Image (cartoon, rainbow, N blue to C red):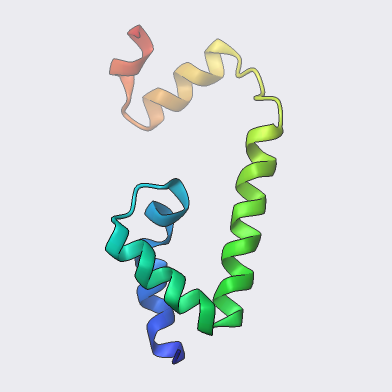
Length: 81
């Protein structure tokens, strides 16, 4: 495939990796990956990164840091949940 299609791949990549893309989009991405080694390497690397991230223990965020972050992001509604 031509590299002009690589940008289109990036537009749907998150949904593809999350398993939320339509069957049509998945098929299109799989066809692109079959013909584009650069994108295939990038997607494989992202998949491995996601797996490694999920395997790591989640850090404990101190409540005062969480409160400041939510306030800075204007997410105060989430503080009460």
